[in-house]
Image (cartoon, rainbow, N blue to C red; front, side, top):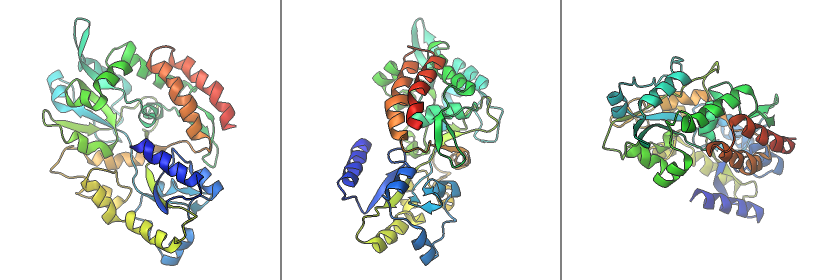
Length: 365
């Protein structure tokens, strides 16, 4: 399980016996913490010595693992959020499929809401089909903020988070839009119904027409045989440019390794195009290498989705997670539990956002 892996890695580092190589997650250990505590093998000297070519990696994927001009990991993947939709249900409801092109600004919040309402079916007080399932993971819900011109945090010139940005008007508006999808427009199942029935299961059974997810989950969707499905860009609100929550994971070597040369050699192997292609074959990653994410192995024309090229295009619009040593604590202790008040309809977006800012800003400082 992911949580067991995270706990194991943290325990090994705390004991002073870290794994030589491990899959590094910035949402667990921020890059600034890695740099300040000297946790990882710094890679710049090895890259220079071997003239190691980084150009096949997306530059923004590499920069996730760089702090103060020093590199501490190599990219494994570079994920993002996309809209998955049941094409059969859209056709039945007379709804035009949303565009896959991330540069198409015609697909707006209002158009999305109109589609979600047309795709919702009720029988008396009972909802038999929902237009959209709200993914309450942070990167998915934060994507709505980005697409409305909002943000999770404000940042300084170095990219370091300085304070909570949820009380910005654009952020509040996007959060309220999500709450209204559940409780005002009633086009999205509430958290209790989702937990009871299961998020993917609601989509796979045809009870939900649209949902947001990461491309790395595509093999799960490919098990669906009952209907046609495809992917699209995210709707845009008041933002000048789309944004999608993402980033990815990296491969890192512990600074304490007793075999740094072997560790570097293995990092090169595990992050190679061949290794990424092996992960693509089992649907385990959204590749960070340009040659792999644009390959026919990843954008397989013989398998759904038809518009798999959107997965690669979405990488251009990724908004990285906040960078701050206290971010894991802030999100786990404040953002996530306080947002439950929004999802349960206990408080409106403005109230919840202010509660989060009041408590979080002291930790950012």
